[in-house]
Structures are given as structure tokens and as C-alpha cells.
Image 1 (cartoon, one colour):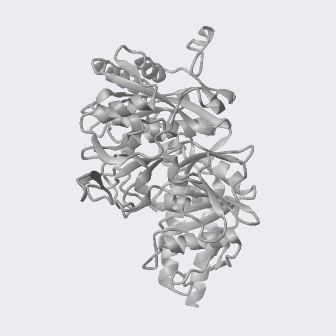
Image 2: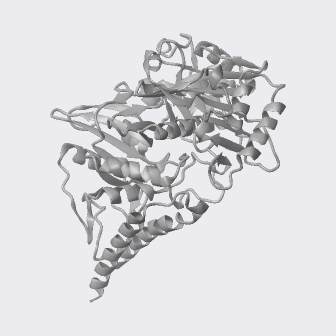
Image 3: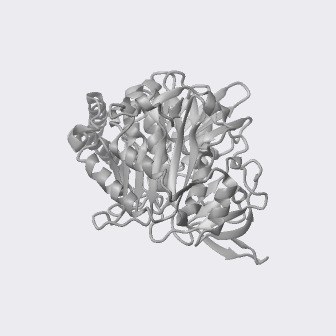
Length: 554
């Protein structure tokens, strides 16, 4: 599948549903005299290197030939100011309750007009790395932010004639993605900036925000929305396939940044066999075939776990919001581990995972919802497809420094359905898609990667638990009185169902999920209302737990 860039003149009418006021405002800006198109990564590198504020380190970029970069290319560093994460409060999705598309079209018209005296650069990329799902995206940025354009072209696949899979894919009735960004824009009514997304018309305006992640996630938001409309399940997660001696096992792990999603996806197997890594952040699953396609070749990874001695430093191409210092050889190198600020980031090339693939034909065997809910042991198996979808819709986790949050603390437990804060369509549609996936031989598991009963759950304990499932050596036990749940015993993390304090805590967390489902009935006029069975099944779990708890008193 591919998108439409050129329209026949007879189809350029107001009756064409692919056009909208916001899309026309944004796309038109790309053709101004003040916009220069960057067609090659070598040119993007040169511009980024010469940009004010860029630091050219003494670290060589690996695989320059494969990345279409100069052979002497160095790792480039740029830093933002106060804000070093995504600002969810800035997002406005047209079509949702109380979002006036006409107002935001006017806002964007004025922003484009005021930006006309500035030099802009534009570039195009391919989002989706297999002909089964692939679309084009176009981005324009002011010249002073050319490092972000360079990172964008690296993070996605720069569009050129070499990509036969795009040329050979079947066109779908949707336009290319167009994104206009002006980080210098200010407005008294939008002190945190604004991100206007028109999902039905594949366009976005990003105003007053410098953070690179805004560009990446706006693009993925539109790509996921397009995929959803065309028979795919949109996935904010990681996927890999284990190649064991006697079988293959395809694993998908869903979680917010900082939950362990990348650690799980990129970890090497401890036992015999190897793995193919699809991606650690974004992919789509075909509802018809069960196959999976990655949306990006590169990785926009946190640097907090990678000191300068880490092998992963070798695969960095650009870095954002991290420090630079001189080593013993007087060479400029990186100061990682979030010493300068939280959420230091880098674009790492696809070669960070030598076993990388862009498409997996086999269906998903196991899907893992990653929680940071300390009422849950490290790993739970969910035996009912509807309940599996409910736990995804009420995924309980914690925010991280990847997000610019004002009214929540990093330790505050929040519910983020399916670990995807970038959804542009009713929640019920994701619920139904995942439920159907669980009805088709995909097993569901809950992973708690936080702490349980006062003890931290280590990455090793999480990975060991997963490998037991994959190799068929996991022995599950009933999760107390909850008939549709089983848990894997892990030393020092065994739930005590004779402990009233623990039972009360578990009840509270289930009640939190129930409250979330109930509030969706009226929030934003019921836009994200879930089917009645979601409430009924949670009430059933609570009833089983209440009756069991009361039996302990008798």
C-alpha cells in the first residue's frame, strides 16, 4: 500500500475527501520560494553540521556507505532548552470533541504567513518498510533547525528511487503525509505550543515546539491512523521473532518509553537460537494476514543506559539533549546517562541490531502488555480474549522523562490504553482489533517491570520469565481466586493471597481500571466508550476477589 502524491486535475475539487482546509494550508507552504527541498542525506548532513548550535563530535559514524553519508561523517549533537520531551497537552486532533478545525486552520494560515520571510528546508521519507504497508511523508522546517530535518531523514527512510517496494506497492486512497513545523512560533493563548493533527487528511502543523520527538510522533500518529483505516492494527511497541531449533516464536511488547519495551525487544536470547528484531517502537499488524511491518529503520533511543564504554555508542548518528566533554585524547565525546538533563536521546542506525528485519510474515504468538503496576507479579497469563483486550485498554504504567508533563509526577500511576497516546480514532476500535487478535491464536501476558511488594523487578527477572514462556518451560499457577488469570512464580515476587493488605491493594488497582472504563462513557461525549463487556468482566473479577477476601474473615 502506498499513498497519493499527484492528483489528476479532474480530481482536484472540493468534493475530493482527501482535501481539507488544514491540509491545503500546510501542503501549499511547501511550494513557497522560501523552501528548498533536500534530496540527499549528504546535503542534509552538511546543513546540519553547519547549523548554529550544532556540535560536531570526534565520534565516527559507522556504516556511512550503507547510510548514504559522507565517509568522514561524525556524530552530531544538538540541544534544546527547557523542554526535552513531548508535550501531550499541546496536541489538538481534528474530529474530536470541542476541536474547531476552522479555528486551527486560521491559526495555521497565520503561522505560515508570518514564517514566509524565513528560509525553510523540506525533505521526504517513506514510512512503512514493506510494500504491504508504506506511505510517503513530507516535512518542512526553518533552516536553523536543519539538524532536526537531518535526524528525521535518518529516523525514517529517505525517499528515493531505490525503494522498489514503494513503487511496486498498491496505492490506497489517502494522500501523502505533510508536516509543517516552526519551533520559533509563539502565541499568548498557547504558551506550550500547539500540535494540530488532521488525521483524515494526513497532515499536521507543529508550532512552538523544538523537541525532535514531536516530529517523529506526529508522523507516526498519521501513519498509524492511515494503517488503522486500511485494515491494520496500529502498534506502539516492540517486536522480535525467536528462531529456536524446533520453532519460531513472534513476540510483541507494548509499553510507554521507559517501561522496558526496548530492553525486552533488543535483548539477545540466553538459550540456544537467535532472534530477528523488527523494531522497538512502531509497527502495524495486518488483520487479514497476521503479518507485521516496521514503520522505521532507525531507533530514537534513550541514552541513559549507554555510557561511553557501551558498544551501542558505535551506532549513534545524531544525539539530542545530552552533554559533550573531552576525553583523554582531547576528543569531543558524549556525556550520556542523563547527566545534563532527563531524556537524552540519539538516532541509532538499524545496524545497532545486526539481526534486523523489516517484515515478519508469521502471526504474533505472544503479546505482552508492559505495566508498572505493583499489585501484579512479574508475569501473568490472561486466558480470555476479551479480558486480554481489557487489560490492554487499561494498561497501567508511569510517565517518564520522555514526556513534558506539568500536572503529573513521574511516579504517578496512569492508564494509557494500549500504551499508545497517539490514537486518532475511538478507543473501542483498538479494543475490538486486539480482541480479534487474541481470538486468533495470540496469547496474552501482563508484565510488571516496576516493583512488587516492595522489591524491584529486575530486567533479568523479566527476560528470564519471557524465555520460559517461549521455550515452553513456564509452569503457571492460578492467580488466587481469579479464574481467567495465571501467574508465573518468580523467587521473591510470589503473591500472598492470604495477606489482606495485598488483597486490598489488588482490589484498589482493579477498581482503578473499572473507574477508567466507566468514565469513558461520558468523557468527551463518550468518544472512547468501551463495549459493555469491559465493565462487566472487570466487575466479575472484583466480585471474585471480594468473595474470596470475605471468606478469609470467616
